[in-house]
Image 1 (tube, helix red, strand yellow):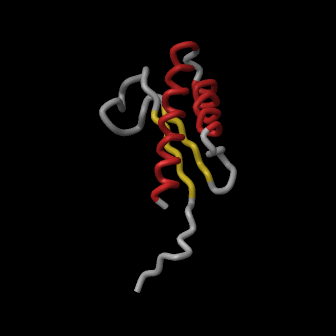
Image 2 (tube, rainbow, N blue to C red):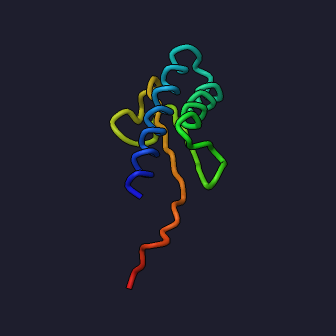
Length: 88
């Protein structure tokens, strides 16, 4: 699970950087989202596939840059089955 968590963080970082790079060229939200989701896909997490969701917010919805229209927030999630984890 820790390995998957690290990979998801890498995909989210790449998506945020890709989205911010696109934002400098074109401020259209659709293009920023597409660029960010593409970079997440390059890192193995494709939006809408295998329980993966990639949400891009411009400006970010939380954090220190929440009102900064020049910033991009990427949230990558995937449901991870926990076959070997049990609760008693």
